[in-house]
Amino acid sequence: MKKVRTGITRGSGNVFLDLGFPPHEAAVLLLRCEIAEALRKWIDCEGLTQAQAAKRLGVVQPRISEIARNKVDKLSLDYLVGLCAKAGVSITVKLAA
Picture 1 (cartoon, one colour):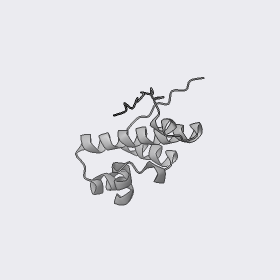
Picture 2 (tube, one colour):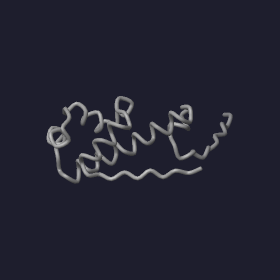
Picture 3 (tube, one colour):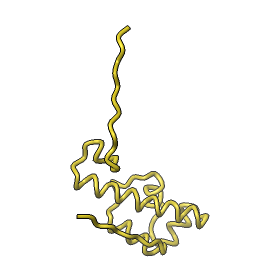
């Protein structure tokens, strides 16, 4: 039996970049995921159902479902940031040159 050598490749810190997305697209997708995660945590901490969260944020429940299922490709950064503002979830952007 022939041994198969496997290697370990260190990740970049951005799974989308590691999956082969172009750098600009990978950065946006990662940011969307991070903001969606903050909104999911807010919903959990508030003990809200999707319907209750939708009502408090002034959106329809299917939008909250997309956040819950991390369907970030359907949600813009502007939209997610706006929801965070309505929820009182602060966002900090750190820029690096």
